[in-house]
Length: 271
Image (tube, rainbow, N blue to C red; front, side, top):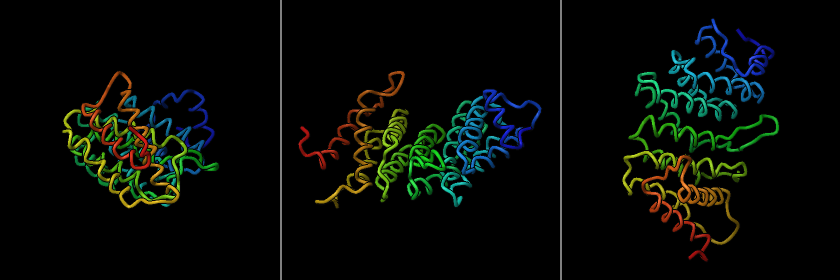
C-alpha cells in the first residue's frame, strides 16, 4: 500500500491503477490525509485525481459516506487548500451516490448540505490560484458541489440557486480571473435544467443580486459587483446556448430576461 510520496507517484505514473488487496478504509484514510496537503502535487495531482477516479469506478463504495463526512469536516479547516478541495470530494461522492441506490443516506446528504451551505457563501479566501499552493478555486469547486447537490437533494434546488447568488455577491477583494464566473454559471444552469422548478423558483434567486446592486452609485466597480456582472453575462451565454447534449433549462428564456434586466443597471445602453 502506498504510504509516501514516491509510491503515490508510482501509482500516478501507472494511470492510477487501483492497489488491489488493500482495504477501502485504508485508502480512504490516506487520501483524506493527502487532500489537506499544501503541496499541489500531493493534494491535486495525486490524492484528488485518485479519489475522483476510484470513487467514480465504485472502488470506494463501502466508505462513500465516510469520505463525505471527512470532506465536510474540512470546511472548518484552518488552511484554505483543505477547505477548497472538500467540495470537490463531495461532488464525486454525490455523483457516485446518484448511480448507486442507498450508497448514501438522505440524512447524510442533508448533513453535508447544511455544512456546505454555511461554508460556501462565507469563505473569505476565494483566490483561484496561488503560486505556492496551486489551484484553490473555492468558488468554482463549490459551484461544482452545488450542481451535484441539486441531483442528490431535489427539494434544495431553489435554495442552491440562492446560495450561488449569495456567493457571487459576497463582499471580497478578489475579482474572478480564473473563469470562476463560467463555473458558477454552469452550476446554475445545471440546477435549472433539473425538472420540477417553477418559473418563480427559477428566477427568485436573482432578487439577491438585484438587491445587492440597489445601493450602487458612482465610482469604481467593487470586486463583488464585477464578479456578479461577469457571472450573469456567462449565465446568459449558457442559457442561450444550452449545456452539452443540447440540454436547455425549461425556464431559460425568463431567467435570461431577468438576468439582462439586472445587467442593464451597469450597461444602460443595452436595448
